[in-house]
Image 1: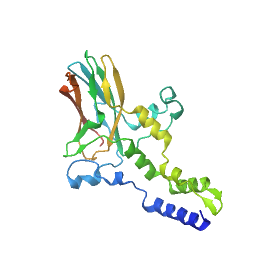
Image 2: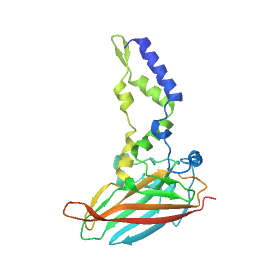
Image 3: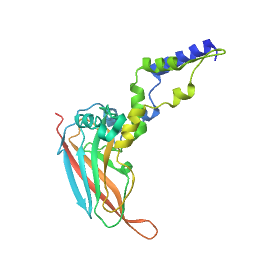
Image 4: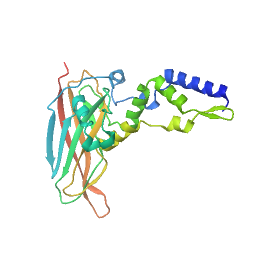
Length: 247
């Protein structure tokens, strides 16, 4: 790549970093609810919820839900016994509300859970869906300093016949591996749970509207009673209500 083209591309990357780095994922509405509430969703809020932990059992399926504040998450992700070489910084942001959920299957048959279908509802008419890895990494990319992006590009540039060549594939495909690994390892996973299995993990949402006074987490669409065609005959739902005491 000619030197002038390399410098031009680097300049474009600088401009992109300054004005166009926000992923389209972050521009979507973060909740189903009144449009006038939308600007208040996904802001930094130091949530305090009561009670911290709740448990329910229904038809031999036990679910425990705990609010996971930033202090808890900071300590959890430092645990090298769990996360090994990736242990370190909490991968979630102040714009996220996180719950630690445990599901226990005491039935004599398998169950199916899908955390992607869980729902958080506030008392202001907003409904929130869990956010996945793509949203967290998009937010991390948007928070990455421009100087870090540009420095990485320039450090990886290689001399070529026409000047300097830039590793475009690496540039556009690179992910923050540590954050990626921590979220993958700690998230509650979708799938079958067989008799006697205990599964736990984290489920995150965009931070609800700060003025909410009640939050209701629905651990829903837990499938049971599979027929010979492998179709569930019953769906369980576990509602958990938390009172907000941010003020």
